[in-house]
Image (cartoon, rainbow, N blue to C red; front, side, top):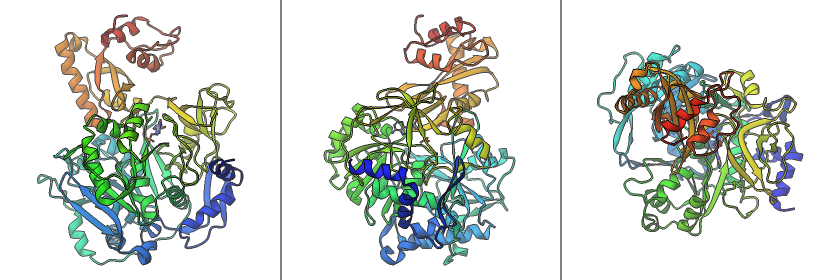
Length: 634
Ligand code: AMP
């Protein structure tokens, strides 16, 4: 048996022993009594009774050995700012931010909502929360006010942290305006909003008594030192919202000790980065990849992390490779969509920079298609390209090559094997039996979920169980809601979602969520949203809508007007990220006789495939309408 297979086997068969050893990767203020408490399946508690703090492990612990080493390099090609924060600098910044939060009454268990562009202060805020035992909820800056308001109501934060604006492609993107709107919409708004004023938006509104200026607060708390609050291992570190099949996003709740151990371990087993080496993750702090691999894992590991505000093609398509060369980046983490964007550019931009330091490029978030994988493998020469598969829920990879354990050969189109700690099973959709080699099954994880994975849905234990553990009536397994196959060599191939979730440029969106945003337009009676293949973004949403007043869709010109209005409604409700690529108008949607939307059939037609079994359809004319809306002859 190879080293990988042996390690993986041990992590499942001798689970507690395995993780007890890994737990030594972090500092425990008080040792744990029990490695795993699985007395209430499927709820798993890791390192029970142990007391620790993620901020201590990410900063304080390194001060003595690497205080003067760069911890965080902030680079913005939007504003031209560059800043390097050593571990000592980061310690000072985070202590100050922690004092600011405490002065606003934030303490252990309180929530802080962070809605920030990619600036260093966002990292200070996240770490400051964990330092004092507060729970952060970072919301991606691309979400609109209504989406932000839903998350405010669910998390009920005491304080929000934002900035006047971000910048994208040289244009200011207002944040504070949007926060004001969200706070107005929220039923339970926070008492205070802390604003990092970057001087980008001169029209930034301010509400006296509620809004506080970060720079002024920094002066007040200039040299503050705030001790870490030691948390029991399963106390929450953060909440991160993610989309599912319902319109209401779920707050993925993460623990403290398990998450820290899993991330620290992943830096050795998967990412192969040593303390002192540089890691560059191109994600955004609003996504799980940004949480785990811009902020926490590199710092827990004593490495240097890079935070980049800007596009991969500005000022020119060589910018990422310039960052790699300038900072001698050893490991990079990005997404297939980003690589497809770069693939369209002249490779001379990449070749202009010395990327010899770059040993591995990890790609995740969506399927990595073979042409893209081949292109980037050739373009980067000696760098290994590693596809890895995971979810917001798991916090770290489920499937990946683990070169820190064994350098197994990779196959294009496959994220290789189950990561150590994950007991993965491919189950037949109807019977729940394990499928054979090459057969398609639902990708599941046999619980207990390993350390680092979500522990529950924020405020809703029942939803955690009913959403994730209810796919098979007589089997308690966690469903990823992805289809996959496994070949004779044990390599997994992920085939796409089993549910109505779509993946746009590596970001998960619920079709239901987009449908609700479309229906925010008063002129729309009904809508079906499906994800269709897209050469650049993997998938894009397409909407098929029924207008309340047929006169509004009588001519192509009128339809174009309504389509624009609907897109604007989605931008406003959900954010441009959910905007359908097209809104087509029909007078009836394909449904079953019991009224269920036939999204799969619509999707198949939109992708030029066979729509499948249609015996249950209520009105066959509905499909013809879809085809003619798409400009296809029935
Ligand atoms: P998110 O929670 O937003 O990161 O989305 C997770 C989903 O993205 C998964 O359930 C998959 O559908 C998809 N996904 C993530 N990584 C990969 C990958 N390497 N290959 C194929 N699909 C992926």
